[in-house]
Length: 204
Image (cartoon, rainbow, N blue to C red; front, top):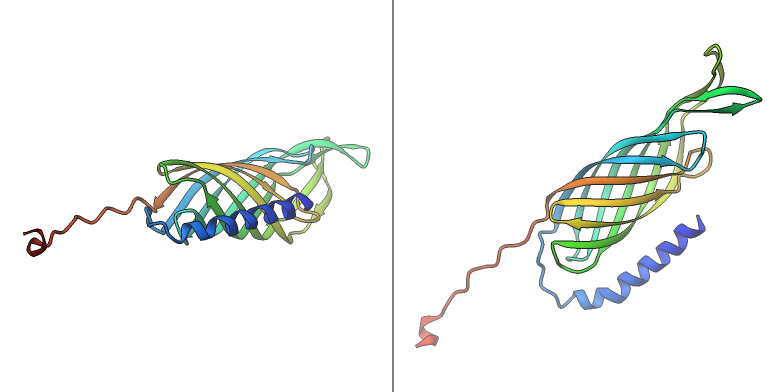
């Protein structure tokens, strides 16, 4: 969590420094866009295995660099096997969803540009079970859990495609995880330049 707070401080400082410069720039990209994509998820707990998920994130560009939005995502951390109470046990897959406010800063104005950002919102883990590997009986069952979480992320945009890496700090009793997301952006394309008009009275 300390790393997340440090990331937020750095992120806000960067925005404040660059915000003044952006005021004099002319907007190059349309402000509204929606990202759709898939995640590959890597749990930080060794008893779980790699999984995957989906996300949708509408975003609005305050300017061509600073973006704010709302992410809705659902991820699965894969089933694993380990010792539990001195028994060989299977840890069932965990489904973790989140609804988070998002912000990011995009560097440069080229078609390909890197970005840094942060997600902050609610994470929900659904019920899951730990069962005996030998006979499949339930050893213990965990009820669903809701926590506030933070998720710093970095990535790159290339045209309509986005690639990002996100570390999800999900709070107590919900497994932290890293997601690698690949998505496509709908909307937010370049603003077409208006044709130049001439005042023939002035020209002549």
